[in-house]
Image (cartoon, rainbow, N blue to C red; front, top):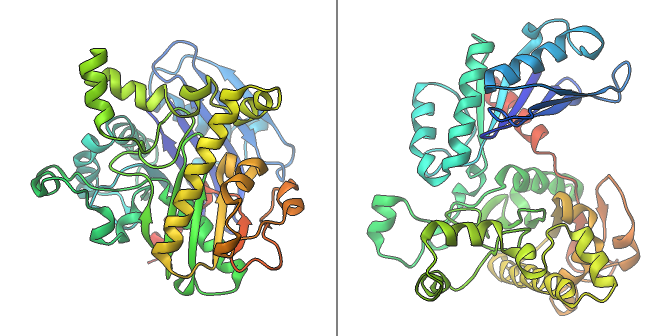
Length: 402
C-alpha cells in the first residue's frame, strides 16, 4: 500500500508519499502561502528513485484543493512522477493537532469523526479548521479512498486524572473542557517505540522520558508504554522554554500586563506565544544563532541557553520522580537531535540520579539513533530522530488493517 500523509495548515500543506512495503519515502514537499500572494509548491523525489529531483514552482494557490491538485500532477506526471496514477494511493493519513477528549486512537474519517474534530476547534482554532480543509479536499480528490486521522493529543489521553486536571473550579472542566491535553504525541509515541525496540523490550515494560526539542518543545513521561504526564497543557504554550513561546510562567503575569501595561487579551496572547521564549530573552529564536552569539560574549544569549536548559533539567527530574524507575531518556526533534550543548546542559549535574553523559559520544553528529550516556550511567540516554510522517503512515495502515 502507498499512503499519502498530509499535514494541512491554514495556508500550507506538508505532504509525503510513503510505500508501506518497505516504508520508503517516494516523494515529499510543501505547498505554501495558500490563498495569499506569492504561493509556492515544493516537490522532492526521494533519493532512491530514478533520480533525485527537487522542484520549486512559484504559482498562485487560491485554495487547498488547487494546491493538492498540483501535488497530484507532480506525483503522477513527467520526470517528477513516482507513480503512474493516483489510484495507486491506497489511503490518506492526516495529522490533526487536537482531538480533545473525543479521540484517544487514530480513526477512519466519517461524519461523526468530522463532527468531533469540529467540536475541538475552540481548543485549536487555527489548526483544526485547517486540518478539516485538508480532509475535505482529500475526499474530493480521492473519492472512495479511506482517510485516517492521527491526533497529536491521542497519546496523552492515558494521563491519569491527577496529571491532567487543573486546580480550577471544576465546572471549567465539565463545561469548557479546560484540562491538560499535551501535544507532539505522534512524535513522543514514535521515539518511545523506537527506544523500546533498541532496548529489546516490549514497550509495555519500559519507562521512558521523551524529550522533543524544537522551535516548539515538549516532554513526556511514559510508564509501562503509556503516557502519564506531559509538559504542554490546554494549548502548546505551557511547559518548556521554546523558540517564541514562554512555557510555564506565573499566571498572574497576564493580569499584571493588563493592569500595568494596558494590554488586551489578544495582545498578551501574541506576546506569550510569538514574542517570548528564546526570542523574547535574547532577540533570537534559532539555537545556532544563539550559540554563535553566546560564543562571542553575548550575555543575553548565554542566559537564554541557561534558562532553557535549566527548565529542561527540572522537567526531567520531576518525571524521574513520577516514573520511579527510568530505563531511558530520549532526545528528538530539531534541537534534540542536533544540539549537543543543549543536551549536555539539560543533563549536567544529574549523576546522583544515575545519569552520566559520554561527552565525546554526545558531540558526535549522526542521522541514526545513537547512545550518548556513559557505560556507568544507570539510565540510558539516546538521541533518536523522530519521523512523524512515518508514524502517521504506520497508524493509518494499522487502523485499516484492523
